[in-house]
Amino acid sequence: MLADGLQADGTLIASGVSSVLPTPFFGGLAGDDRKFSHSCVFWNGNVYENTVGMLIGCGKIDWAVNAASGWTPLGASGRLEDCEGNLVRKIDGKTAQEFMHEQLGKAPGEVDLGIVPLATYDQPDNPNFFLRAPSRFDEETGAVALFGSIANGHQVRVCTATRDDVVQGVEHALAALRDTGLEPVAAIVVSCAGRKWVLEDRCHEEVDRVFTALGKKIPLIGFPSFGEIGPFRQADGSYSPVYFHNVTYIICLIGK
Image (cartoon, rainbow, N blue to C red; front, side):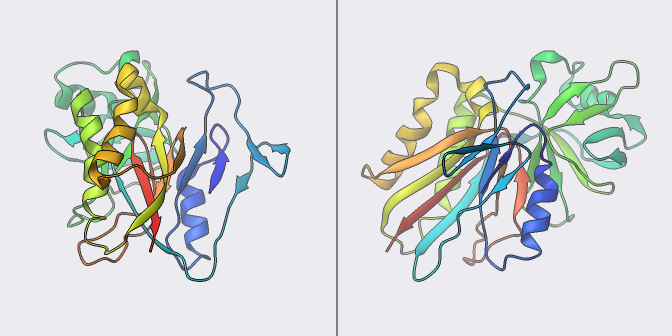
């Protein structure tokens, strides 16, 4: 699935589609190379804004999908106490920026936009977390705006990653797909634009790691996104709910 990355709320899209579609799905939001001014979706030769587009397959299609990031939570967790849409005001009785400052050891700033996310746990015992990256810091109130809405009550932890960690996230995504028995013949990738901002001239390594892990080159398509949509593949082969992610790598293998 595809959606307008500047007007859409990926959290609401993932939730809404999940309520009517009884299968895992994946995709991402269109971006504009960090300008944050305009994005759109193309369909049948036409251009659409503020739109969601979906491609649905039916019949016998063998596939497997997973999401991972490479970002590592650090420090203590905190409870989201005052959120409205994508704006986080309070975490554990502190302003959102005060909480991030404590965990990072420095005040968050412009350089951290899009790449120093909050690991978010919708259940205390959930081993998987989805990420929310900051899009704006309000210096007057200490609030943090995120790329995607978030709900009160979730536990969050500040995350960091080196360039090596980001590349390693590709292998984390593929690791859960190795026991599927699937012989991949093609792959679709959605990788966050924020990952590209971190990797810079090492972006090609994401593609290289796929081919290395699979032991062969297969047809592969994909795009850098302003937010990713997809589930985690569980250890028993089932899938988690579909989440909206930031700075995450999603890969779908198609095969037999």
